[in-house]
Every structure is written in C-alpha cells, then in structure tokens.
Image (cartoon, rainbow, N blue to C red; front, side, top):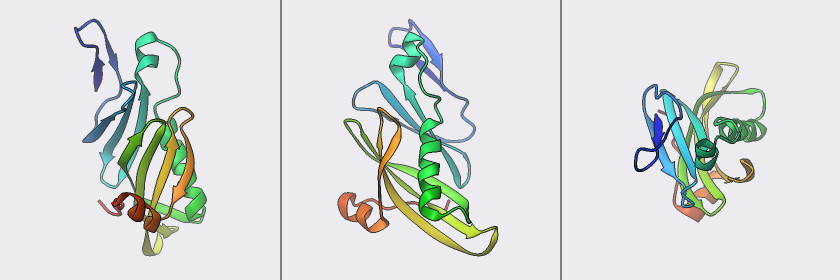
Length: 151
C-alpha cells in the first residue's frame, strides 16, 4: 500500500498488503490507522503519521500501537492465557482519542476450552498509549459497539 500526495508530487510506501485491510483516516488529516488482516484471526494494527512520512522525520514505528494494545490485553487477561484470536476493530476517533474494540478467544496453553474476551481500549494518538480500558458491558453501553470474538 502506498500513500500518494494529491497532484502526484510524492509517494510513500506504507506496507505490503498480505490479504485484506481496513483503513481509517484521522479527522486531523494527519494520521492513518490500518487494521491489517494478514491471517484469519490475527489482525495487526498499523498507525502512520502523514507528516512524518512526507517530511522524512523519524516517527514511531508503525506497529507501536499494536504492541501497546497487545501489552494492555496481556495485563487484563493474565500471562497464563494464550491468545488464539486477536481481532481489534475500529469504534471511533475524536480528537486525540482513538477507541478500539478488542475481542478474540484465549485458552490455557493450547489446552482446554476457549474463552472469549472483549474490551474497549481508548488510546491517546499523541503518545500511542492505552489510556483506559472498558469492559465489554461499558463498551456496549457507551458506544453500542461490541467485539468480534472469532474470525
């Protein structure tokens, strides 16, 4: 996937699309969220700053958001849980707040029954840190959204 400047005066490669993806353009016209779906059940978040790309300044690596969300998820689930399906999805983007619904399934060390999980994660796009985590019930009540839990 390549970002092209209007008028054809520049282009910047973002990543190679392996299968399918969703692209969300920030209201500030300076940020792009990509929910890449290279494998069934294993989505990947990529976050780009357009100004960093177009000016050549060093920004954060595109997978910084994905790592922050997975770290917050591991804290919630516990390290003993193995994540079988990781399916973050877009809910809303208001100012510096990005809200994702993060759902999927886990098990204990590849054995035993699978359990589902669903959280809302509010991310500050300036720092790419998870600022707060909502329960499934809070996410549904405040936004009407729920999580995808299996592919």
